[in-house]
Amino acid sequence: MNRNELGIWIVVAVVLAGLTVPWFLWGSATVVAGLPVWLWWHIGWMGLASVVFWIFAQRAWGIGIESTDDDGSSERRVGGPGRTREPRTGGDSP
Image 1 (cartoon, helix red, strand yellow):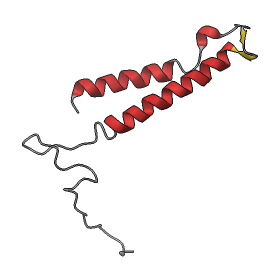
Image 2 (tube, rainbow, N blue to C red; image 1 turned 90 degrees about the horizontal axis):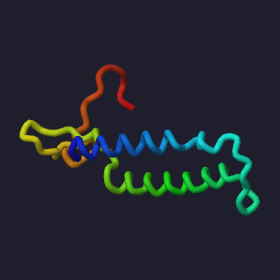
Image 3 (cartoon, rainbow, N blue to C red; image 1 turned 90 degrees about the vertical axis):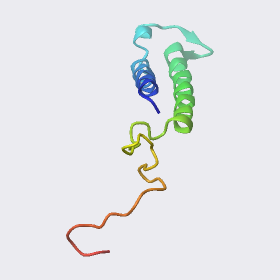
Image 4 (cartoon, rainbow, N blue to C red; image 1 turned 180 degrees about the vertical axis):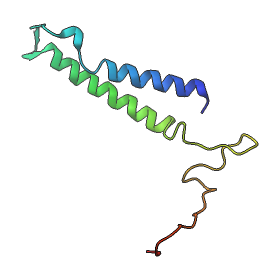
């Protein structure tokens, strides 16, 4: 992952969070198919947010968590193949 993709995901998260509450529909009494239009907004927005989260989980899960070696490779990742268990300090072993 590069910085541009991290920035894009941050912007997507801020927009999703910012438009969760339909502030522009406050005071609207419009009803569509028996439900207020603000409720339809929430239903649609929750569907969109779940699709975006699925895409994020497939493409960018762990973004910003990868650690890079001195040569710039990301072979050592948290929980990845290069992970070693570090000894605990203090206390008894379970």
